Image (cartoon, rainbow, N blue to C red):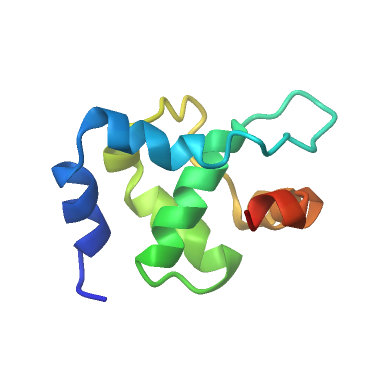
Length: 102
């Protein structure tokens, strides 16, 4: 995939189409029991964008998120920055895979 493809794609999309990307995951319930530091939709957005951009593994996803934080804030607030690789791993291990795959 060409470098920057996903960035160009999101810039070209209308606001409603951008919202639809996250709406696709609306049925996912946050499996965490404590008050999370990072919202589930923020974790999902980083993971999807990072993987589409070529990130490999949770460390790669976390690094991609840190590098793209100003860009990501166009879509969600990321008040606490991006999650660590450990957080990505824990959250995705807890998610209901059947709902995520729909």
